[in-house]
Image (tube, rainbow, N blue to C red; front, top):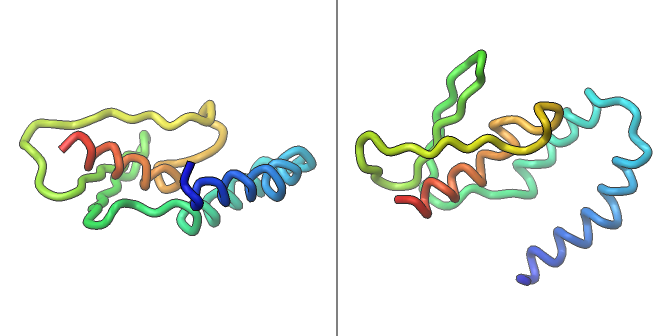
Length: 100
């Protein structure tokens, strides 16, 4: 495990997880995740994003040139309760970059 991943894991266990256990306001938790995600997770260099307002709200991500007609459908976890295209954009870009 990388040093960066180890530090993130430690932060989540010591700071984030106890806060989640005490939380009672779901909208405040959602807002916190929206604020923190871009600071903690970074998209790969060269990632380009385009958003489409919904419903459903869509995020298109690519890294570099892509072949026409190719796409990956990624549905983030969270049970449609937590997270959004913005909180998972780094992962969508990483998948797009790996797929070419």
